[in-house]
Amino acid sequence: MKKFSLVFILGILILAIACKNESSQNTSTTDTPAQAVAVPSFDRDSAYAFVAKQVEFGPRVPGSDAHKACKDWLVGKFKSYGAEVIEQNFQAKTYYGATLPATNIIAQFNPQIGKRILLAAHWDSRHAADSPLSTERKGEPILGADDGGSGTAVLLEVARQLQQHPIEMGVDIILFDAEDLGESGTEDPNSNTTWCLGSQYWARNIHTGNYRPQYGILLDMVGSKGAQFPVEQYSQQFAPQVVREVWLLAQNMGYNNYFLQTNGGGVTDDHYFVNTIARIPMIDIINRSGETETGFGAHWHTHNDNLDVIDKRTLKAVGQVVTAVIYREHNGTL
Image (tube, rainbow, N blue to C red; front, side):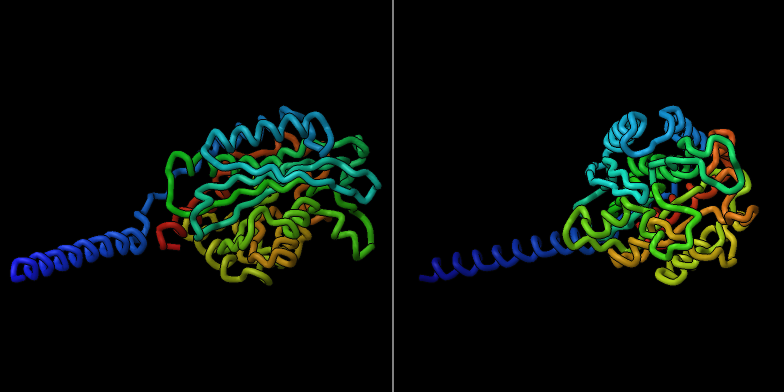
């Protein structure tokens, strides 16, 4: 009986120690903070090459051969950088009566991790050059090197950096389609819903259940010479804390000549529908240099929106700030 009792007691002690060790291991796995990762240097030459490649396809108007070819290239690039890619197909019903096939491209990094940030741009280009500043070939689609191409290029380079410098945080990159099919030059208050068809569709049909990123950042026209990014009004309304952190970070990084602490007015852009329909706080970094009557750059919605307008320094400024946001958020230093 004594031997049995001694053996029994020893067994209990061994079991208790084992359970304690296992509990300690489980705690360390879940409670240990992610190891800090240095903010990588955003490669402006790589981003510029991504703009050039998109322009090489021609105007990326939904339904065109160039649009399909560019989509296949974008999906392939994201997959090559280790992202899990979802092609969200939908039918874009335009204000001029056409229904066009369109695709939101969703690239997920670390989809299993709950802590996430959403980055976005649009990848389509305008179906007609309709700026009041130009009468040249007004009925023809434009290349959209800046308007569409630059934001997409910056996010491709961000994806490349995420592969080379992995982090333990979720990042979703969404390239919205059919952003630029909207009706301009009209007094109709409902015309704003003719724009940003891809983000409207996504906001009503989010690619996964219970999707709640901490916040989102939209990039639009972020590559031209002389670009300036004042605080966009809807960004300030729906995500003031994010605006504060991003613009302060840009200032501290020496990019205050790009990121202006002034009111840039409100723009009906993809972030508006992400904020109002999906209820995800998202800001818009958009060129509102104010140098023309349109409030945008002189190349906006004209055939001058080609590779000549792109400035590597602008791509670097925006790309480095966005990259810093991601890695500092991961490191807990934002």
